[in-house]
Amino acid sequence: MKLIVPMAGRGTRVRPHSHVPPKPLLKVRGRSIVERIVDTFSRVLPAPPEDGVFVLGPDFGRDIRDQLTELCNERDITPHFPVQEEALGTAHAVGCAEEHLQGEGVVVFADTLFDLREEVTLGDADVRAFVREVDDPRRFGIAVRDGDQVTELVEKPSDPVSNEALIGIYYIRELDKIREGIDYLIENDLKGAGGEYQLTDALDHRLQQGDVFTTTGVDAWMDCGTIPALLNTTGRVLERESDDLRQGTVKDSVVHDPVYIGPDATVKNAVVGPHVSIEEGATVENAVVQDSIVFAGGTVENAVLADSVVGRHAAVDQQVRSINVGDHSQINVELRS
Image (cartoon, helix red, strand yellow):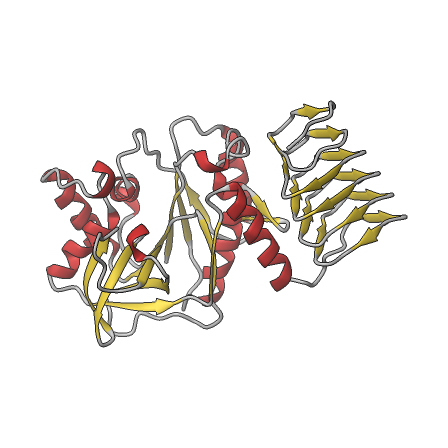
């Protein structure tokens, strides 16, 4: 069983927090997005993944590979790191893992969080696409079904006939067939939405060749693609995962749950919450913080923050109402939102 995770994108909508780590390595309540994905599929697949194939960008450094390697080693998964040299679309990204596209596996794009409670099987299908009903399916790829069987996949339709959005997760019996669909697009220069090679189109080609597709709904689907979405998703995760929230030190402070205080984090003379995630080694002192994230090693002092994100090892020291501060930055003057 393989887990194919394209993550070469730069996550521009969550900058500055994706300037150094890619978006899938951002922490949500103490665990990175990609870690949560790996653990979910280790739990719900008939067999846990043996290979983790992470498609990286050409400028991703050694530290990113080291983090992913550590994650895999802890779970007895063999890591692989193919590189997407040029961003030519989702199908092209998966195609960059060509040498690993064989046997059974899951392709999952690591820009959202989701929840699955029950084991997932293929049954009689060649591909099981994961979907979620949405109000405006024009923003997504969609699955068109006749009964339980998918008849068509369409990327960002202008006139959708289904509201089942494809969420970028596919459980595939034979990955080499998907590679054939990708090769077909590229060899015939069949670009789709955005002028790029879309995985939805490659999968639809296999569907039209007679492969059997079905769908599976997810219990929750949470976007992490923008700063407001990341804050909202963090709040939802805190509501859902209310155990073991206090791992750091709280002294002379008021905590309005749900609030996560990570290992070696410190909250002192402060009021925090609700919906605050204070990651490992971060400090909040003489401050009021709500609906915010303080990433690992960040410091907030003498400030009032709401709807804010403080980057890793960044420091905020003065009155601020709402702020988005990147890694290793320092804010020590009064700002007005």
